[in-house]
Image (cartoon, rainbow, N blue to C red):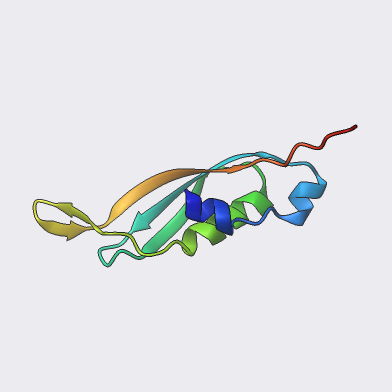
Length: 90
């Protein structure tokens, strides 16, 4: 989650339109630990979806899953939250 927080960039058009929310993304960790298929399960806005997918695809390699001693691919579901910073109107 820290990696995602540090690498996500709020899309300018979504910020201008004040679009916020949580994009739910599913992805596969392949047998070699790389990120495979990435898809949006719950969308908020097309620009936020694209940014969430971009960041998930850049995740560092994972330790692959194991089942009965065999290396297997594993699906993960992850929420990616987009929240605009609060502005103080003083």
